[in-house]
Image 1: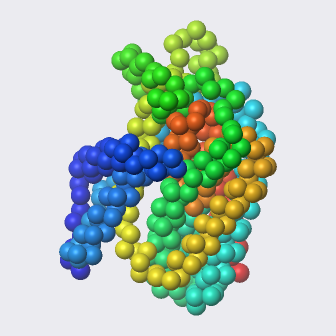
Image 2 (image 1 turned 90 degrees about the horizontal axis):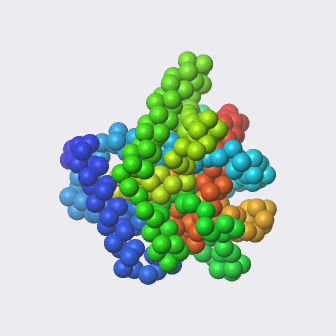
Image 3 (image 1 turned 135 degrees about the vertical axis):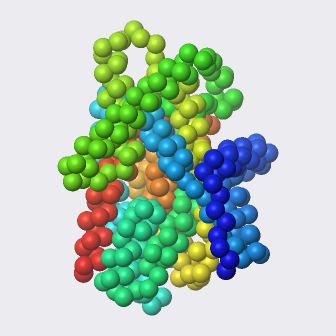
Length: 403
């Protein structure tokens, strides 16, 4: 194997934009992609990752991307989520939030049971099941990498990090593909529609057949960028305070919180000011940020790591995906009231249960652009995935690894 080809930062961002536009073009031309609500950056990103795989297989050379700018897009996106959060929505979403918290905990437990069972079946230590389970799926790449050394130390398993990364990679792909079809099944089967179809879009402008294109001028765009930057500045300050207190949270979490605080204080202090929340400009910037992040994330997937695990990863991930789909359709959706918001959250839950929060939001964005808005869904799911998941997952993983 020759030395990896490293794509520099600026070129990575440029390729991310191109990959996103490629996905948009393919979605516009291939009806089945639109029918099942496959997000545009997912279409383009996965196609690009196949090209990267082909280079690896044919030329024996891995392609790696410098990704610092990608993470800024994620922070910008979550600051936008915060700016869209109204206090009334947080209160109205209280019951939904509790249900999602409980369902997430059950999913973490179930994923590790499936992972441990599959690990033993294929000759791995039972504790390695967390790498086939919640450490890599609900936890994602970061959690898998963080816990792999503990699994290796407890079991003597070599290649624990590579195992966790491979499972997380395949999980991200599956998460991007299952959410849209889940929502389509629920919405069409139950003839669902938004309670308030005229409410402003949260992320992305609606498709032309849902509502006429909204008008955006340079002032509204600049206004939104100002408040996004203010939220990010406060987020950096909050991140420093959190770290000084001995806690560890991703930067996007305090930026999300800062956005919520700024938006709600602004509504109280300046009730007649030009709007920022639920505006077409904020929706457009949020979709751009999320799309750029996902396109770059997916095009950088090293798919060859999956093939190296062969039958084990195929069988276990099939079981994990089947569990997620059945759980969302027959447990989560009924508990959420069988309404339109429940269908949107079902798409999102399928995304973050197998992959990551940005994938979940992309799934929900694709659904709401086609069928109509669901603002509360975009508030409660990030709150669950940003705060609760890491804490609950760490407790469960620690118990299993130390068992």
